[in-house]
Image (cartoon, rainbow, N blue to C red):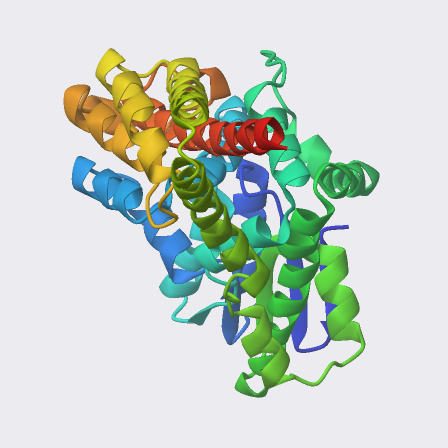
Length: 383
């Protein structure tokens, strides 16, 4: 079931990235199929992360916060936690099948080709494609789902195609846009990259079982590689101009309202509007940091920064709160290592690295909510 021969010179092996049996199957196929090229469902950054999981320190975490990448890293980490949970239940590390295929190919002196799209491009495309409701559903499903200690039989999962299809369908139900990027787009990209290797000889492609059917469908049609389409799939489009207008429009509108109220000489109305803006921004940003169990100084920082950063689209309250959290409750080497092994979402609140990411993301969410609610309240009072 997990092996699909497209033709005499192209075989697809569908694997579970957390299964010892899949790792053994990858080694066996490299030895028995004797390919010239072993194509792997990995990009360079994912391969580096699998091969060197200890390359993570406070400096890296600080860069993530300063560049505003905390929500993306948090999203990626939460998805990885689910994989790690299953992997630890199996007694194997995630990616063990792919690393086994690479090791077997290297030992047999076969060419190794990484054919997946860069993980950061995939996540950014998914994040930008999702609407706010979808983002909330995904984060809620990851953060607030009930956890159990039931072990997952990965080999049984791999043998059950209906269950794999059901899991894919669940992702589409929760976040259709994310499903399109994480599943459909990657099926097309993987097939295109594998097709590009065809002149190089006999190919064994080791890919996740969830992508097996989609990739095979593209390749069976003997698709010609559309280089323009591959470039499109590998591109992160800039934000829609309307979004830029919203980001700048709200601060400009609010500053304009404050100036207009002041020009009317109505000091009571100006004071009321200022208190509304300061209070709602501060309280909701602080609440977000508190929900993430941030340090009192981080919570205070979120409260102070939010009324100011909400008027500047180039800044975010969560960045400041996260950096304070990073400095006053700095993760140790042990925390950094433990973060890479988290197998329960609840441990994000207990691990110092996870808490930094949560403080950053939740303070930003609270600040955004505060700006919208305060702005609506002020406009409503004037009308």
